[in-house]
Image (cartoon, rainbow, N blue to C red; front, side, top):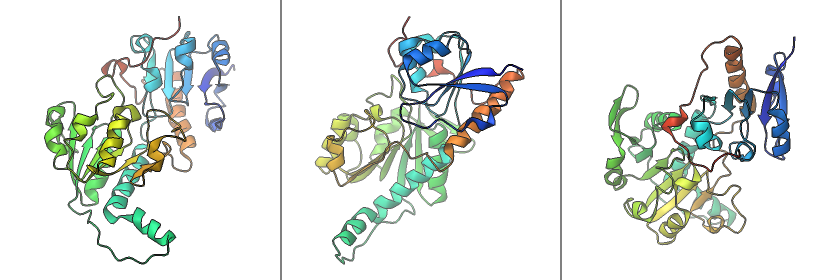
Length: 324
């Protein structure tokens, strides 16, 4: 039986995912360059996107693709008008990274509250200095973005004893999360939060959302945590808020430019945690992502509806057009 070709876009210098799970039914075609993708598109209708930063689809186009599965929750690389308005089915890898990201967020909030970074710095100087820290019980946290990551985060932080408010596009009641506030209430809620957690995707509406004007509304001495997308935050405005003392600190797993340039000023701020977009990457995550794809591939071959299909029209196009 002829195996079904599946294009796999992998970043230069990164390992190929463990595809043993699908090799009985599919032939992975690993591509890293535009020419390799162009050749692969001549024979494949399925693409496994293992590089959410790639511009290859915008350079080359989509050929005869009918289904694209992403190894991430985010679908940034697919938000062009041609794909958004096409009949290509897009699915993502929900259920792999949400809990690990939520645990990372819990960890950095505990780091802020217990001032663990200062403890480490004092240890390095061999300095014994008794200090008092803050509790996490009753700590007020504002989660902006009630998607899969925001949902898991809110539930975990509440289980740890924190007081969590959630902001989404519209005001509504969720069976699991309770009240979700509308974006119109964001400025009011910012004034009350000890920690502001951003779990937003990058859309035309969220790009540059957290600017100087919005940061001025944040309660003085609060902390910002961003695990969504870097371009949601205006980086210079964040640096200004940190340097002025208005914000006590920030924990960032995402940046507008990744990897973060070595000369970027965020590296030098001792109250900014720079994390290399790895908050959701537990040991073995690549295998779990392939497993998600394999389950959907079985459904595809059986003519059954796919799991975790993403409606790109609800997000809209955010990038330049694809090549013709």
